[in-house]
Length: 384
Image 1: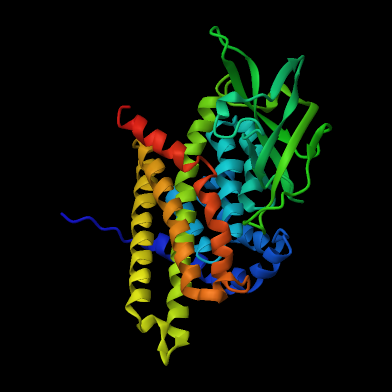
Image 2: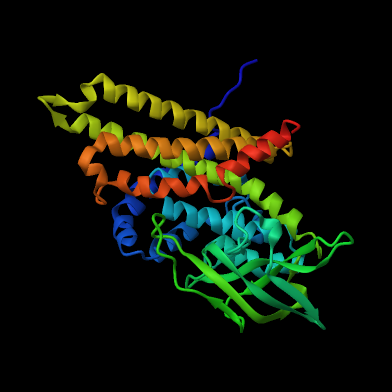
């Protein structure tokens, strides 16, 4: 018996469709959005019509009936061209809609998921806080029960998709009580956009991902119905750990796409760029760089697909997700650096995609769990 890593026909068809969309729709337009730090509503709307935001959700909620492997395929192909568009999809699905699907009541799913799956609406996940960072358990935002309402106070930072014109909700983690040992009891609560007291700050000025939406949020006596509690009270911490485990697979796919995009652009450039009377790709030094870049991207692809397959089949995947996220994010940075070097001075010019990739790569070692956190998780799974 032999292992077959080829995609089944339906996933290969999805891959080809998204590949064509990325090259023919995203690539010609995204540079202008990126330079203007503008959110690409037109592109996102088209992604919604394609069903990309509904890929891993059942058809009964407006989804496409796929799974995390299908989502990863789409993310990789988008990120081969641009990461701002890819992270908008990743956050919209993994962080915006997935908590509702995993932990929401039937009523909450019926209310929110159809619009999230169609891309008509974006959701966000309010976890990180200014004083928290990787220590998500140190949540200071509070939610106090007052009759039939929750009253929320606090702030969140670095929240993707939280301030667009089509953002419909943010799922917020907040301390709702104390356990017997005095540690915080954290719950997740749905806060619709426009709720009084819920303030969305101006977009951050970022190094990369400049065509995606990232903001700080504040909550001042924000009142939402008690029915906006997502999942069980006090289970918010366990819920977002599950969401982050899954999200790491999606980020790994995105990082793999960026790494492969660096290969794509560099191979083309190395064949076209001439120096000293021959293409620079004729030089073994360039060839070896490209070989190493291709090796990294290929290995990262195997890693994230393995983790996704384990998730899809209901097998333990925490360690594999951390491995995939750690490796793919670090090799994305490596490939972006080498791609810029191959392009020389042109690699430092924003008109070339590799300059955008170089700026976009570093955050992959930080977001959804830093490289240090991934190593900690892997060591823990090894018994330490």
